[in-house]
Length: 200
Ligand SMILES: NC(=O)c1ccc[n+]([C@@H]2O[C@H](COP(=O)([O-])OP(=O)(O)OC[C@H]3O[C@@H](n4cnc5c(N)ncnc54)[C@H](OP(=O)(O)O)[C@@H]3O)[C@@H](O)[C@H]2O)c1
Image (cartoon, rainbow, N blue to C red; front, top):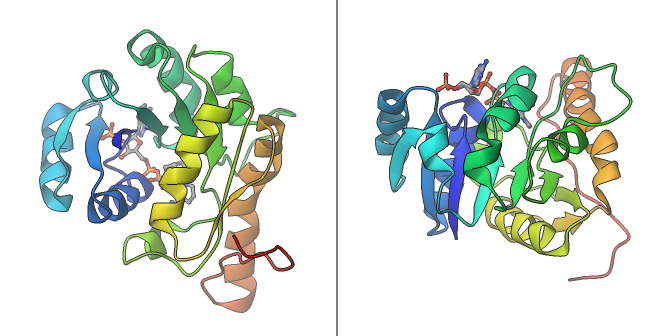
């Protein structure tokens, strides 16, 4: 799969890039700064590094992985370049008081169908290998969700699980905060495994 990671120079995007490169995907690291993107691309063996706008052109899936606070302004700025390409939002805004999710609001800004997912994965763990966890993905568009699930399955040792329509992003975007609280309270590195589902 050819994937662009917008904000791929950050902790999460770069960790995701490592796992996707390892899985054989063609990854383009995006940044506001082309030079920084190329440096990070070289660091993880990605196919290329480019400005976010150049990175999203000609790929099969765009992962929006900027700092959460920059998600919406970045989606709006890249809408034209993204066009109809499916988008995976990994954003989770710990301070949000909005009733709707960042992913739903991203969908109002771009034409390509938006899926949301991977919020329960910690960058620190993802950077060192496939976490022994499940990953959730949600979305309203079947094709975008299928691509996002395909990506998720490559980066965790557990399962990539379809968590339903895009409105579920409201819950998924809260998972990062839950994980952070668990880690503080129990001084650990929490991750999620779902029980009670049939084997895939
Ligand atoms: N960290 C985690 O464990 C974790 C877990 C699950 C989900 N997430 C989600 O993954 C996303 C990235 O998290 P992160 O921890 O990697 O964030 P981060 O390191 O703070 O930021 C990622 C990248 O965003 C870009 N950026 C920063 N401010 C920007 C702005 N105003 N406009 C456009 N781009 C900007 C920067 O890239 P350039 O300066 O190179 O452009 C930066 O390297 C967030 O939405 C977060 O909620 C993170």
